[in-house]
Image (cartoon, rainbow, N blue to C red):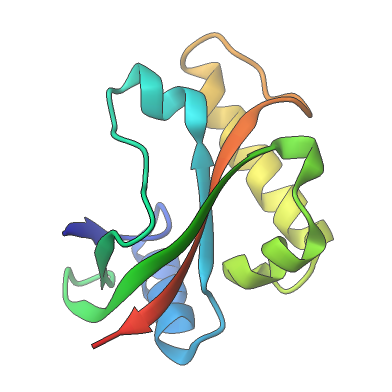
Length: 125
């Protein structure tokens, strides 16, 4: 069991948790190298996540259905849409900026080869 809050601001957390609840967000990604640097265990199929909103309230429970390691430059448009970003172009813009910022704190740069952990999930009871 893991508590997940998507987004870096309360506004994003409220918006993204609602996308999960309505089924418009059923995937997420994270920087694989930062997981290793921070000693965060990789996500595995079957993991249960409790999705929280901006008020730390649980809005739903999801089960991880698939996990893939994908280079940033090879993320498919279908995955980007499942992340709730509507288009690949929007996903790329948002995630390029966000991941570049995170990596800069470790004196690293985002490239097309940077590995992402791409996770698919579904709402469960």
